[in-house]
Amino acid sequence: MIKKAVASFSFFAKVSGLSSSSSEPMLCSLSSHNIVKVPSSKLFVSEPNPAWFGNEKNPGYNPSWTESNWLKSRFHFSFAEYSNRRNSNFGCIRVVNDDLVQPSRGFGTHPHANQEIVTYIVEGKLTHQDSMGTKES
Image 1 (tube, rainbow, N blue to C red):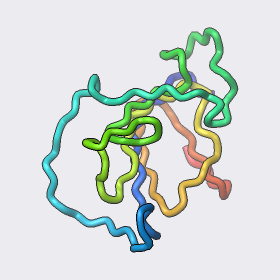
Image 2 (cartoon, rainbow, N blue to C red; image 1 turned 90 degrees about the vertical axis):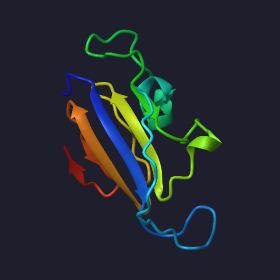
Image 3 (cartoon, rainbow, N blue to C red; image 1 turned 90 degrees about the horizontal axis):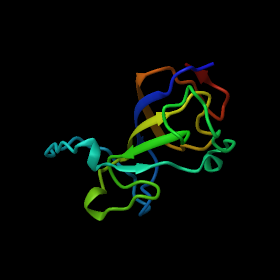
Image 4 (tube, helix red, strand yellow; image 1 turned 135 degrees about the vertical axis):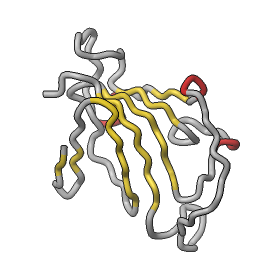
């Protein structure tokens, strides 16, 4: 059983198939962009309802939890309930999040068709299981 919260950095990139806005294939290309450092205090913070991801409600008190909600996500650009026109359209990258997942919790099974998911674990241990039964920690 996981004893600590898991801090991770994830991004999803659409790697094949059609773009969401047209019938044209979506291509990822390398291009030069200015890198802008955004302080974590300026990132949008999401603390979603556990039911959205197939979890029971949050416990009233759990001494191993560092936050009151099962997940705290900091979105680097528009995603889910966060929408900012100045902070969107990054080519094939769809999501960049800093996530803090509390012990013994996680995301329920959900699809990621034609996408690569990269997760960098900062601290703790995370297990990923896909819809085909592949499981890795």
